[in-house]
View (tube, rainbow, N blue to C red):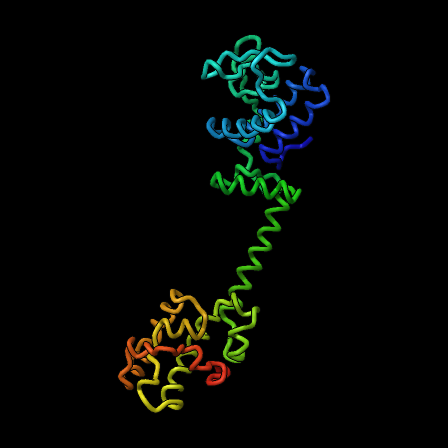
Length: 293
């Protein structure tokens, strides 16, 4: 089995799977699996702390199938290093070999071979890159590992697909930002779901709402008590956009808005009309059917 692009979790599951059906009593197999896993850890990680983290992730999945025991059991060995007196200390034999600090019969620490060292310093490419070489935050790495499990894709193929999807998203948004919405009917822009998430929708509707209020005040009513002050909340009522979004957009039209409100002596109190709602009084789609000047 090749673990070149496998996650640490996948390696742990592979080892546990190889140990099933009585194979966990094959000492030569356990040694071989442990040595291969340790070699892979050392190939990918040069820092001891990262090696420990990788080993911990591998061990976690093996522990699920071969958990520690309270009493002596076949294929288990007694580990006296338990931190607590009542901690289960009988561990499967695989963990006697699967340790970064393991020593051979001559009591000499196992060294990384020159071949492994050479592999560790190799410049990674997309084909041989590992998750750990991406230097992701722990939460992001865990999310990626789960995604890889669900997709069944190797890391390099997953990265290619992710790049493709994200690139299309970015270019799509860039295209939409530059798209002219002035010819889109107001009624459609207000209610058609295809425009709901368009990045230019809020600004286009805000501009039309300002025009609609100005037109209404100048042509539809004759008394100030019936006119509406152009405010952030009034625009929100007409467009359905978030006030926080509208606030930023209105900064570009402050002079025009201020001039109109002053012309008619309108202010925030002007919109306090008991029993009346601006969205019912002003039909934006009727007054401003599109954004063409």
